[in-house]
Image 1: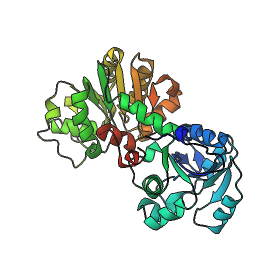
Image 2 (image 1 turned 135 degrees about the vertical axis):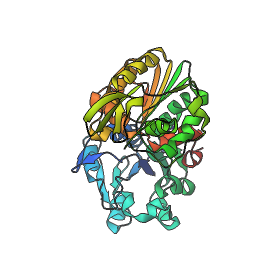
Image 3 (image 1 turned 30 degrees about the horizontal axis):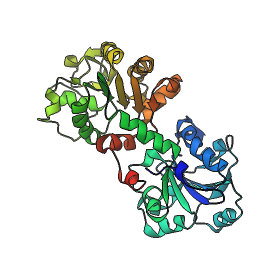
Length: 371
């Protein structure tokens, strides 16, 4: 990829910087700063080079959500100005007043439905604001939106510092040192099944936890009761017979008799699987201690419902391992942030879906445009 550090003489140039600003909020307050901190290296670099930076991003799923809380936090780190929405006359007036090194932050681009549809007119409007485009939003590298895909077709396009690091570090775990361990949790089995099939060939051991564990247990003939399962049929899938596949020994369930820990063959039709049990977590410890490469995406339990023990105990063990460790996925990263151990991993990705897409294909259409 063309990196922004390879661009010549940025002083005075208008640079459209797409960053990963989709930071978790609760009641308008920022819950964790990981993605925001990952946006800072490229912002600082452009600021120091004297570029006139127009900062683009989105937040949330609803069109009325605002980036103002993110702006308020960024003000603590860099001299930055609020521009409002890019289509307004006020934004263009503020742009005209920019000096070398200034940063002007735009409102949530998802407030305009043309962002998501990669509308050509909207892309043209955005492109008219800059001389070059820098994509530092790896978390959106799987989305062909106006600000990730369209702009890279209209302007000279470069990868930001964090985006470049993401691609480099994730490329390493696609050729792991042995013994290698892949830990996969979370839900959305339809997006993760191709990954399981691919990495069953690449990795020595693949553990499946989280909601997708129920799909696998069901396909193997176990009772999963009221557990969350997908519409994907795993019947006849080769990976189910693989000796590399590691499944939980025990699980935490909730049902008519309350919360209990049971071996996987004792779950009843009225119960719901909510996390891995302690025997499973202890079994994984041996694999973790022996591994040279560990890749992990997705929590092992219903993390948002408070079933965090399996994920957090494993996170501490992976952090302490001698292996090269790479983790990603929203709740997985939230767990290590909560435990304040993110500095102990080889690499922590800001990507969720983008990380999975890259690991599956080795690239994305957005990445291809930066080559």
